[in-house]
Length: 425
Image (cartoon, rainbow, N blue to C red):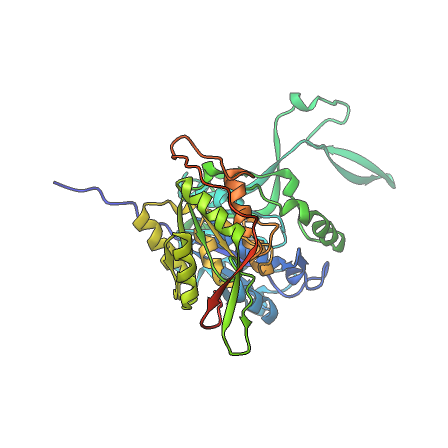
């Protein structure tokens, strides 16, 4: 009796061209939007996309290379011959692709699109590796009329492009046009090596939100992006229908990331009673819970015991531990909410479907998060997350999960737990 073999996992390489020279906006690829450099924003979006196997930044600039590595990307040093003003993005991608010979699909991701999302990247990748397209491109619905100016008899004349200027059909009577956003492209790797261009064969159009379309080409584009960031970077919050499990970092997430030391050298960390209330409500709602920390300090396990939830601490590779825990518990990582605060949480952010940063998290972590609390770590951030899922009264429960009532809890107050050594998750 034969058994069917599982389809092999296809390797997807995301290449982010980011050379150092830029005449329109000097230092453009390191310009910050909401405190995060453009190249880092692109790296984090690629790392969070579920289809992407490898992320490589192609650059000739040491500062860009350092920022890319710090964000978790590989760096491919771009030769001077393909790093000038006339160099094409295709040349950078082809050069980078040589370092990844087993790649099945390659993505061209432009860090000059500051509001690129991981859904954009997942969309173009899926179009090629799942739906069989040869190439894919992000587009946005477009309803405008294009014009071109020409000089005739010494005077400027406006000429309609693709439309008769004497005919003004209603929008609903016109065919739907799409604008290429310039943010993300996907190509079958073998076909790209042959054609050496981002478009060949069947091209899939991956629709994106037109409100997010912006390319940084001029200084005023950068100012617009900085003004829009508070709106564009504000994601929707998860609901109980989205989540099967909540995994919590400890230091900086359940604490304020500080250690108090008394005159005899004893150490204390502060936690918040409101977080305990929120965790108890999540447990009653039937969600799977886990505390996951690199810290070996016994205080982590002591706190988890008091909260009556499992704990894994002293873990070097939190992402591998999270992946194994999901397999053991039968949980889809895409339905995991992972809350963290620092760069060692980023690999878990890339694995979890709902990466959440606390308000006091590092800027890089906030940029990678799908949602950010308004409350800092150690001041009730976990209670806030519980309220997202269960409502302000922490009493929202799906029909499939049993609901249990509990006695009223005292007003949240900071709670000090003894620690035997410094903590750093």
